[in-house]
Image 1 (cartoon, helix red, strand yellow):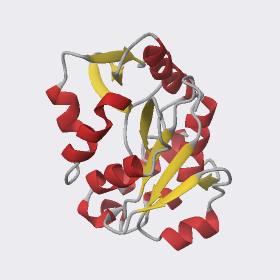
Image 2: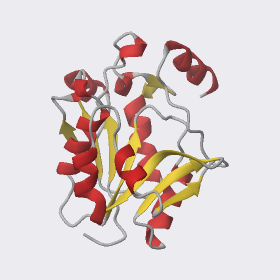
Image 3: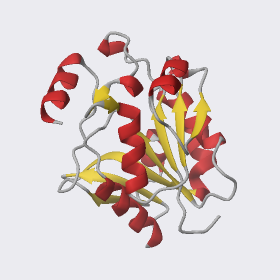
Image 4: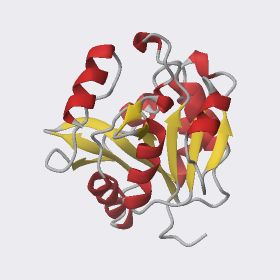
Length: 199
């Protein structure tokens, strides 16, 4: 795999508990399933290949969303939280991946420009990087190869890579993206209405 090729991992397995049990991957955004939007963002930002972790309503997502060219990773343990999806996705990464960009399906305000900035930070030597919004850490996150095993070991519950980033915060490069992206996630019916109206 060329060193410039950074895979993206789109975590899209959640069941949307606070959205009345509507899987986030299938929420409509700009007329298409939200998971398609997330895949398009990481591709436009320069990632490849793209792995999508599915769990809740996996068959429905595969039937309704166009994931052509993506590697779909099944997470039967999706109800345990985001950590299980991160572990499943990391285990499916191509061998010799120099890093991975981890994106969440429920952050529709993340832009290709934010993704591109994290990839640039990796090219400049950052082994750990996260998008920053007015100095606060957000998504997406880039994890270098040397941290992948530790990221998987620490992924529990809904924490994802939080333990890893906290343990190595002195090496974490915060890449300001507040001028090109919005960090807000989509968790509640009110969030969905706001994104539908403004998106």
